[in-house]
Image 1 (spheres, rainbow, N blue to C red):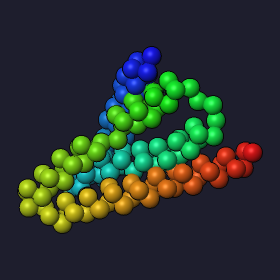
Image 2 (image 1 turned 60 degrees about the horizontal axis):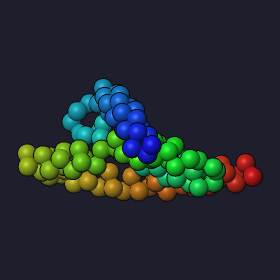
Image 3 (image 1 turned 60 degrees about the vertical axis):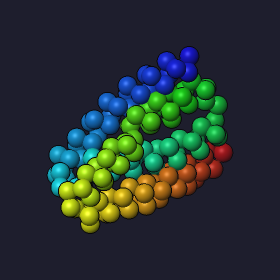
Length: 127
């Protein structure tokens, strides 16, 4: 059953990735990998928030697999981020490549922490 949950979550996550990434590129342009950055930052926040939320409530293993492994696994785009960074470097855009690497890593980690902190705050208030 976990496999089906992961597959369903993956289909949903990939679709949402396409929508969110496209919206970011439409809004901010294509001179920087904004779409990839957007989904990675949002995904980092969500995995932080939801991992804490799931630890504080009864969530079935299938639901965890659907959302965390399938959904967020397909939604975030670490491999795309890596490829875009390499292409930027290869094309002589070293400064943009380094900015992309720093932004995805630093902002991503900050958003994981933000998700954890917010979830902890929310769940402390609920108790």
